[in-house]
Structures are given as structure tokens and as C-alpha cells.
Amino acid sequence: MSAADSTLDGAPEQQTGNPKWRWAKRILTLCLFILVPVLLFMLIKNLDWQEVRSALLSYKASTLLLALGICALSYLAYCCFDLIGRHYTRHKLPALQTLPVTFVCYAFNLNLSSWVGGIALRYRLYSRLGLDVPTITKILSISLITNWLGYMLLAGAVFALGFVKLPGSWEVGSTGLRIIGVGLLLAASTYLLACQFSRRRTWHFRQVELTLPSLRMAVIQACLGALNWSLMAALIYVLLPSEAFYPSILGILLISSIAGVVTHIPAGLGVLEAVFIALLQHQMPQSTILAALIGYRAIYFLLPLALACIVYLILEKRARHLRK
Image (cartoon, rainbow, N blue to C red; front, side, top):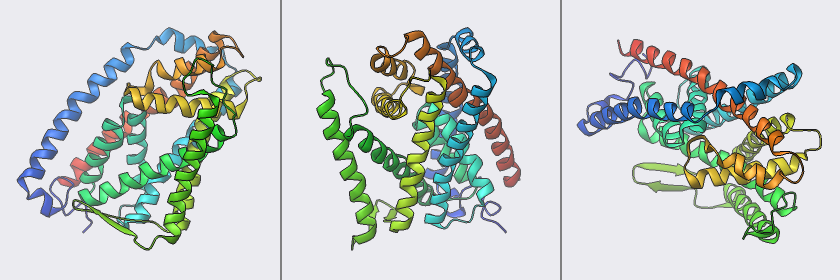
């Protein structure tokens, strides 16, 4: 009998017997059913679908196919984050069950915020497949570390090398950005060195035990995280004119991503566009920049979200079947 077959609602028996856990799951389910449609409506309401259509039609078919290929590779790279978590926690879910869950969570995360996709959906879907809360927390932790470790390495290198030129009116300034880059590189290096040399390898946070991975696993985390961010920037790059400089586009994406996290706006609507226009408007027309970003949103955000909604319904149906 598999772990999923031995549960009433996808969670381990000892947790389904806990009244607090049952009520927490019911409240989480109710919040998801209310929050997700509301956020989807807000996302769709704020989009000009005529602009999306016009922007996509302005590109050659070969450019769109290349962009779709880059998008697929990026999502595949991100889905491997949870495969690292699978190896780290040694849970028994097959990779073919893990990958769809990660895909759904990532698509919802990008469009509807990390609280919905990265956290709430991850706990719901994994628990319904039989994983307990501490295991899911470890998977989530490894995924977050993988993502931001790759970010720190890339941003550190791009900022420190001065590939992004900030306007004089920005308080940080180019020198400040270089200093931030060096700090990010030091932070990422500290994690890698700790994985190799730290004597204390385990920490306890409430009921969750977190252990430093091996250096080999940490390097894989760094490579996958950096690969995903690089592919995201590559998608925007292929949609921009030929005079665009890839390291600069990568740096601007990394800056806009942090701005989106700080503002807590779902999908970073408006934030991404504002940062790109502010930093690229002296190199190319604003209309060209907006067309590329609209195409980027359509290919990297909206298309995967539509597919993720279908995959999510399939996962829920399968979970109900397992309960029966």
C-alpha cells in the first residue's frame, strides 16, 4: 500500500486524526477556493488582451517558437528544484508525481503571488499525495534556497561587473549596486562553504529539522537556480531588438524581480515594465520595450497558467480518486 493510499485526505494518518490539522486543512482549502478566482479575475481585468494579441502578432513565428522553447526549458529547470527536495528528504513520491505539482505551483506563484502558488498550493497538493508537513516544509525550503542562491550568484556577478547602468536619479547609484553585487557573492559563497566545512549541520525550527546539504547538492542548487533566472532573461532578450545586451537585460530582470517582491503585486504587474523602461528607454523606443514585455508575460506567465489550471484540476481529481 502506498503512502497516498494509507490516508483519508492525502495526509498521514496521525495528522488526519488531529482536529487542529483537519480544521487547518479545511480553512486552507476554503481560502484557496476564494482567493485563487479573485486573484485570477484581478489579473485578467488588468490586462489589455488587444495589446497582448498585437504584440505577439508583431513577431516572426521562428522568434515565438524560440521563446516557447526557452520558456519550456526554464519551467523544466524550476521543476527540478523539487526533485532536489525529493532527494534531500528521501520521500517516496515518483518524479512523475513531483514534476506536475511543481509546475502548477510555479505557474500560480508567478501570476498570483508566492503565498498562493509557492506555499499554499504546495502544502495542499503534497499533503493530498501523502507527504507530512515537516517533509513539505523541507521541500519548500530547499526550493527557496535553490532559487535565491542562483539569484545571488547571478545578480552578484552582473552587479559587481557593472553591466547595469542606473540613472543618476536613483539613490543606490552604480557604485552602490556594485557593492551590493559583492555582498550577494559573499552571501552565496558563505552558503557553499558552510555546506562543505560547517561542523554543525542540523538546526531545529519548531518541529522541522533542517540539515545542510552536501557541497555537491549545493552546487547543483546554484547551477539550477542560476539557469532558471538566465533562461527567463533570455526569453525577454530574444523578444527585444538585436542591439539589446544580454547581461544588461539579465541585470534589469534581477532588479525588477526584487522590486516585484517588495511591492507584493501579483505577477509584478507594472513593476517589471517600469524598471525596464526606466533603464532601457535611452537605448530603444518605449513601444518596443513594452511589446517585448507583453510577449514575455503572455508566453512565460499566461500560457503556463492556463495549462497549470488544467493540470491542477487533474491533480485534484486524482487525489479524490485516491481517497475513495
